[in-house]
Image 1 (cartoon, one colour):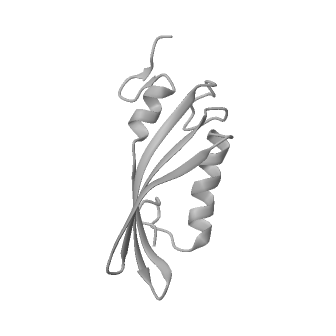
Image 2: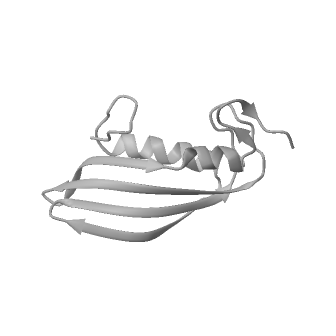
Length: 109
């Protein structure tokens, strides 16, 4: 179960849909795993994604700006498969890098 999906969806299709949306926004996306920690059945991964804002995202037209998105994923593994997933990402930081004030709207250029 993906606890971050709007419908709390399950299965690889939820992950695929999420990743496709990101790849449509940051066409040249590169993801680097910074750290991975495991404790019992839980795995925590800290990641950094970089890419150029070349596709529309949440009604924000492409800016051509390079953005960096940091995130942390927590996965509960059951029988060798991810059974539950939580993620937190610095989307406010990403919006600011795109030139958007997340609380008001477009920042002045």
